[in-house]
Length: 84
Image (cartoon, rainbow, N blue to C red; front, top):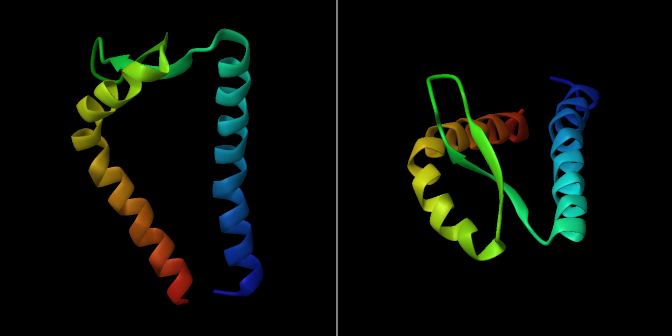
């Protein structure tokens, strides 16, 4: 894998994450609330709601176990890209 490809992958991942961070920051600035996943009504559906920042740690604990495999895959991908 060439250096240009690795840089393209990194930009392709970080670009959308930066956009989402800016969007959440803008929403927080104007509402003083944070958009966060609150429930899963059905398979393949997620409900996002504006919540107070104090509620986020409690809600995060509910989603952490479910998101751990996804986070582990992204970490493995990052390590693989770094090694090449």
